[in-house]
Length: 458
Ligand code: ARG
Image (cartoon, rainbow, N blue to C red; front, top):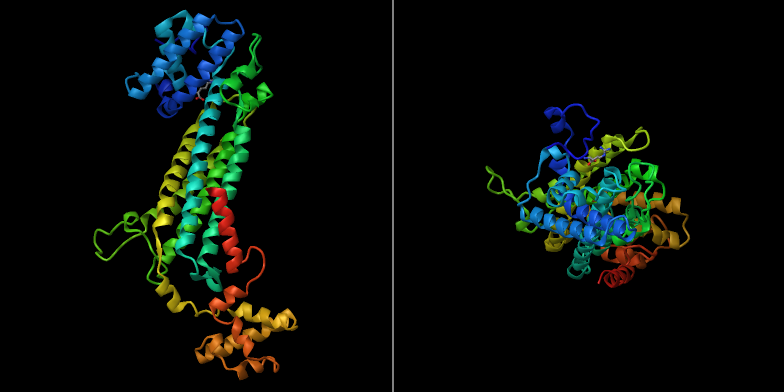
C-alpha cells in the first residue's frame, strides 16, 4: 500500500529510488514516543472540541498505546515505503481502526507534527544533558575535597605564569559548565513552545484549541505565528550551539589532562579503567577517552555548521530540506551525552601527582608577579616594578636560583629600602596567600566559592 500522504492527485506510484532517497524512517524512528504523545494530545483536544467523539478518542489513544508498546518490544514492523515514523504510526492506526484512525490527522499537518515531536524530543534531551552537566560539576567539587592546599602552575601561552590552587582550576570548570547549563535553560524556553495546530503553514479552518494540546504536552505556550512555526528550526540551531560550546569546554579540559598525563608534565594519574594500551609498546597507558572527547568536539561543531548551512536562505515556509536537521541533531545529543557520561567519573577518579608537581613547583618564577605587586604596594610605579623584577628574574636565571634564593643585597639593588619582609611574598605558598581580589586564587576566596557551589549543587 502506498503512503497516506499520496492523495488521489497522483497518476503513478512513487519510484522506488525516490522512496529510498526521501525516507527519514532510518533515523527518525527514535521519535516514536514523542510522536505518540503528540498524537494522543491532539486527539484529546479534538474530542474536547467536539471534532472527535469520546469513543473515537479512546480508541485512538488505546491503539496508539499498544503501538508504542510494540515499538518498544521490537515487534512493530517498520516500513520504509511509509517514509517516516509519523506515517508508520498513523498507517498502523488506520490498519487497526480504519476510519477512526483516518480522523487523527484532522487539523494537523506533518509539518506541525514533526516540529512538535522534535521540540518534545529536544526538551527531553536538554533535561538529560543538564543532569549530566550537574554531575560533572559535582565531580569537580568532589576533587576539591581531596586536592585541598595543592598548588599547581597556571599557564598563559603554555608558559608557566602564576601559582594557583588546584581547586581554583576545578572551580573554573564548574563555572564553565554552569554557563553551559544556563544557556541550555534559556534555549529550553524557546524549545518549549507548541507548534501543533499551525498545520501546513496557515493554520486550519477547523475549530481547534491550540492551548489545549500545548498544555497537555507540558509546553509553556504555543508558537504564535503559523508560518514562522512551519519554517522554523532555530530551536535546533541554538541547541546545537549550546552543545558545541559544551564540546569546546570539554576539549579544553581533555587537552589539559592529556598534557598533564605525559612524562614531561607528570601532574596526574588517570584512572586505568579509562585508559587504553598499545598493541606494540608494552609501557603505554594512553588517554584515549580524553583524546576522543577532544576529537568529538569536532563533530559537535560540524553539526552546528550543518544546521547553519541547511537553514540559510530557505524561503518560507516548510521545505523538505528541514528533514536533514535530524541526523546532526541526534548525533550531537548522543555525542555530548557519551562524553559527559565518561567525563564525570574520569574527573572524580584521577589523582594529582602531588610529589611530582611539588618537585618542580618553584621553577618558572611563578612568584614574580606577586613580588612586583609587593613593590607596587610600597609605592613603586607598576611599570618600574615590572621592569626591576624582570631584571631580578634575569639575575636569578643566570645564577640558576629561584627568586626566594636571591640575597637581600640582590633585592636592595632594586630598592635600597627593601628588608627581609620581601621573602614573605616569595615561594608559591606565600604567593598564593598574597592574592586578595574577589575571584582570585586566594585560599579563603576559593574556600568560599567551594562552599557556595556545594550548596548550589546538593
Ligand atoms: N519525513 C519528513 C520529516 O521528517 C516529513 C515532512 C513532512 N512534510 C512535508 N511537507 N512533506 O521532516
